[in-house]
Length: 82
Image 1 (cartoon, rainbow, N blue to C red):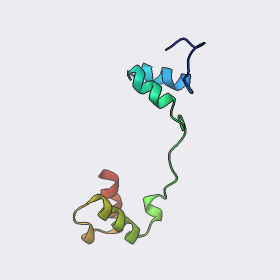
Image 2 (image 1 turned 180 degrees about the horizontal axis):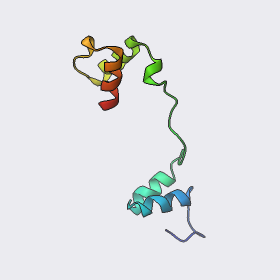
Image 3 (image 1 turned 90 degrees about the vertical axis):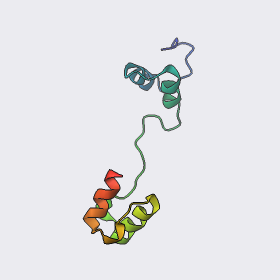
């Protein structure tokens, strides 16, 4: 890791962990300096909480074939495995 006294890393601990995993210095620094570094992702509803129509539209957006014949459970499985 760069010298801690002159480092401009926003999250030096995350940088170290990423470097330990084998990431390049540049990529680890980019991730550690991102505005939301170390924070969890979005708040999308779980597929099970969505209607079949919502799942169908999502499947349509990403181009899952055979979606018109799928049940809600099949749409969920297809979306998760896409």
